[in-house]
Image (cartoon, each protein chain N blue to C red):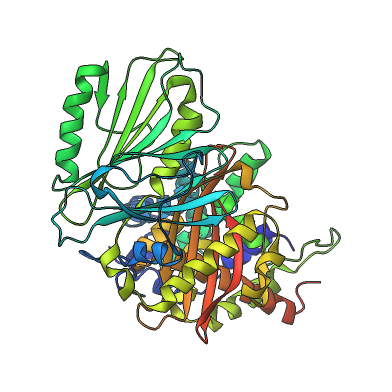
Length: 186
Length: 345
């Protein structure tokens, strides 16, 4: 079913809105959740939370495309769940490694008192992504948006694993310099 | 800002960029490989780094290799990375006179193991050997000219079935690719165990690597022998001279940098580091704890390279998981320099 028809089901508060969404995007959302959580039950619960959040968001929100809209909800749900688990020392999937990699974009000793405006940071990162060459940007997003394992990224693009690692290393360096120029880092 | 905030901020990436990343068509060129079917360019480079050494060191030298009968050892070469000895042995036994002898290279820690040559059998044995009452711990490598790996595996399987309680088609420590076997005499702490791996010699035959140990040594010598076997590479001495100069240079540079890295002594490789190079070490000399389990080299262009990525799989003190020393090197004016080196899990 086309996205617009599914969105119409949400707007009309039809019962099969979730069924249709699940049929079309269930695997996609599950894959995002799994990459972050690496636990079947947690990933399934996360996907169910996605449908609930989507139901609560539409209306008034009217996404142009469901796929990225749902993906972002799933990603946020999975991340929050993973954070809670890490506090309890459970699970983690790729996320601990990913957060460790992103640490390299930040100063060695961040001030505990600093608060960064989330919106300003989002805007800055979004502009940064547009400065990257296509391949480098895609590899960066597969790793740090979709939380894909390095081997999966290499397989997806027909690249050597070392090439993926090298690309990510370069991108992280560029991101750090970008954030410094935008004075988002001390 | 912390890494979690950064992770969430990345979540706001444009839909168009996310959609583009899913197309999976960014780069469909096949991965660059050193070795193409029928050739052995990668391993040529391993040999090209070391000067030829003619056998003749004294019989009391535990690291000496004496040529066996019938010119079984054509030559041997060696280079060092700290206490690691890069070894290459050339075999000619069993081949027609005009055939180019296959040879191999591998990494082993010569502060832990000594090499032996008995006829056409190359062995590594612990310098600190377990008591004679226990099954011997050793890694043996033999060449089977004209016998393909699968056939060699089937023959060995039959032989082992007569002398071991159980034989299975996967080694205790399987390596990526290739056939392997495991044979065992039970689970008692001193029960004999055996792992075997089979490598194509690129000339219709095979090399057979056999690791023997006892149960209690599975995660000691058993694991180290598997790591050594994982660094095993077959090469072709006849094509050695044809390898371009940048190949030898890349390996020389890599080995010098590896030694400096694991020794936590970047000054030893200062001339090989590019200006502003980042060099992230363990913070201490780890060479005595080190087990190298494989090296992977990738260049951006086989004919006129400008960058290379080197990944050294290793573990410290027999820890369960592998760590990777990953380096990027750039090639300019006939020499390689390291742009960055870092550790990754």
